[in-house]
Length: 418
Image 1: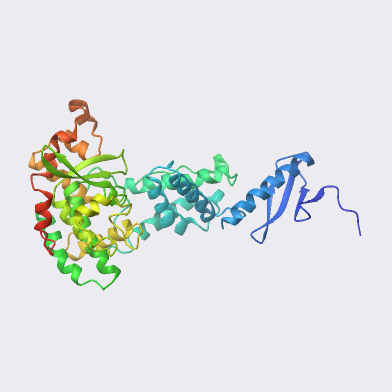
Image 2: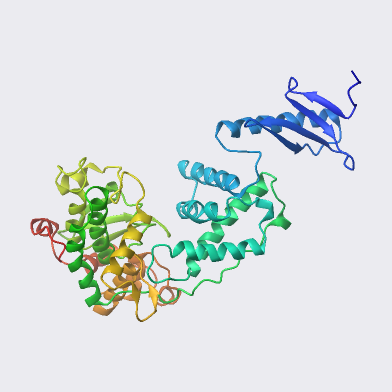
């Protein structure tokens, strides 16, 4: 048997090998991970240092292997899952941002399906151009009228993709010079599509009939939840998805303000958490939602509020229903010929109900622009500059009206009208 070459060294009880290649002074490592042979550079020229670095690489690989993540692949899908894992860990430890949920959705919904098979260090402008085309096709799969992705959507996708690139940089899968610049050429969303008062009436007066045509099971539950979701969004102005989907029963309370019981919601989403005062009619819509779930339907509305349950208000199989509700809403609007806003020529979404609420409140003239900004968690610079901050509690009745919660519950009907 010929003697072993002095540039090859077996380590880790023969399960890994250090070797040198022509043209580089650094020791290279060959080891097995997930049943496959993998290679890595130790970036060390001295054998003693290379052995130490090699063992660290192997240990890291074993840890990731137990987590079920391929560490030998530079594919976007692999790195994207690592990025998701990092964000989920931060969310679990109360260190992450609420927007992480949107980035995770973007990664699972678009980045992995459309870019997953590419190597992370091979993503170039040509690849991104194809991605942009395929993204538009994917967004319009269930739409009768095609739309272009908005600047907001593209910005969310860009941030999500940059999270994947950051993960690749951390793990040495690519260099900074290999990270492409991401552009945003989406449709301007300065004017959001909304609804007129008559269109809104058409939405809630036709929904009951549409709900009755649903297949039994989850489809019926989904439509019933959506019906009241629509009414709550249109009467509170909270953000669909980020704020509404984070709402739990423990975030709902009844507060005595100057002798009147008022319904409050503690919402947390895109901006800082805030407490808002909402109309008593919202109690009726929440009560309808309560009656859809076996685990809480036997409780009275007040008992449910007192229990402060750590359960999401809007849930389908105890999962985030944001995407499902959005798709069903688009199908419903299509069925009643309201999907496209004639003024903006844009497709309406659940977020259009927030814009409808803002417009309605300003037209009524019962609250100022600054009050509305405080209530909706927005930051209009000019309004803040001229009016400053105010205490929403002092003007709570402006948002809630004088209708008592008990009265709303007593007048609850099985129809969606009102």
